Image (cartoon, rainbow, N blue to C red; front, top):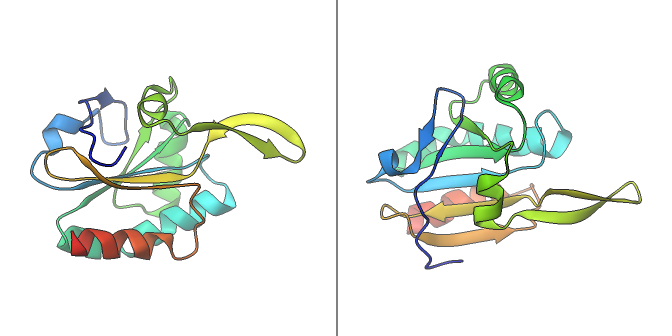
Length: 150
C-alpha cells in the first residue's frame, strides 16, 4: 500500500463527519484499533494523546478508527481526554479500503476483527508508511519519529 493514493472518504466521527479531502495540506495518521475501552487500545490511544502536541508540532493530524459506535467513541474520547477525533467505521468501509480486517484467535475461538494498524498519509493523501500487526509498546514514538523525518 505505500505509494498508493487514498480515495477520498466521508465517515461519521466524534466532532462531526470526517472528510479526508478537507484535511489537505498536512499529513494524516490513521490508526486502526480493535475496540474502545480494551487494555491495548486504551494504552495506544493514551500514547497518541500524550505525544499529540509533538504530532501537531510536526504538522500531522492524528485520527483513531474502529468499528465501535459513535456513542461508544464519544464516551471513550471523553474518558481518556483524547485531543483527536475517533472515526466510527461500523459498516467497515475504511477497514475494507485499508485491508485491516483479519481472522484472529480470541481465547481459542476464531473471530473477525481489526488488525491493529497505522497508516501515514502525506499532504497529497499518498500512503507513505504503514505498520500492520502493531505491538503497542514503542509504536506511537516510532510513528512520531517517522513523521518528523518525512
